[in-house]
Image 1 (cartoon, one colour):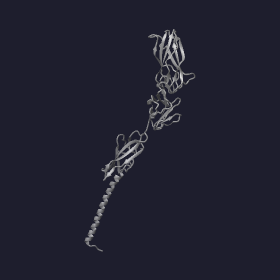
Image 2 (cartoon, rainbow, N blue to C red):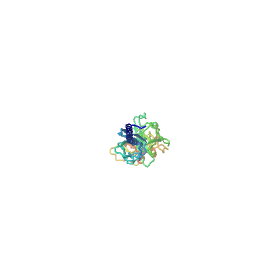
Image 3 (spheres, rainbow, N blue to C red):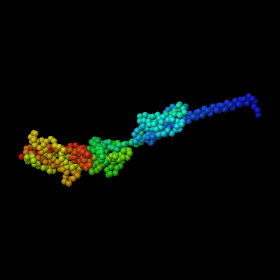
Length: 397
């Protein structure tokens, strides 16, 4: 069938117009598809670090509205405490480098210590297309400790109702070149050494304790401990690398472990020329009221000496004293036991009353776990109060 000329002309115009319209729509759709591809694909789905494996990561992508970025994306990376430096770098950029580029570059260190670092992803072919991520690095997981040491030790009154007040350790001793260190605590006379609950602070990943050579984790809520001699209580501090580098032995005692019941008055001593003396063996007793053995000892000094006349010209120490162990007590006087006091009086030619005060200065030997009069030295500690004993005698014609 043949169409009239005008109808044929209209029909051709319609086909040509439709083809043109179809071609125009396809071109616009293609441009729009390219735009959406960038906004959809220019994303960081991971942020590996060159210096450390992260523990966790949280990524919020940028917001895009009408083909434009309206809000930056956010990335929060959690790293372990063992990574002490927060100068870090992106390990790799996983997008197609022919289409996308990132700034700062992968492998370029950035300081995340004080504020987020902004990373920009931009199109290689278009300067107007870019998205951003604010990247923050925080610490998480178990704290990391390079040290392994006890920093504090005390008996809190709240955990030890029998105490009048909280008592802190008098000394935490780090003994270099030794496998054991020490913690010294002084408690009041009469304290039950077998019923004490310590509070411990430490710069370490964990602490363990031992009373029978087997270390177990020290409980978070504390532990009632028997410190009574001859028991030993050990603490062990470990760092985050598992290095069992410090062991502490806890020493608990009283400030004045030696008790004298009263001043001593000797029997009368005959006068002499000062070259002879009268000995009073076991003239009185002394008691170990502490928590460790005490060996015999001499005084560190004498004071408050009185003589029958002022400015006595004779021997300054007419009266001297010493403490001794009981017979066979080679280890010393044990806690709760008594020892003997010996006194010597030089026979002065001047008759009258003489008085002196013997000052005992006991120290603690960590190596022997005994108390005696040793000079303070390597692992010998001056942790006790001075002890005084007044002695009176009469030298008669």
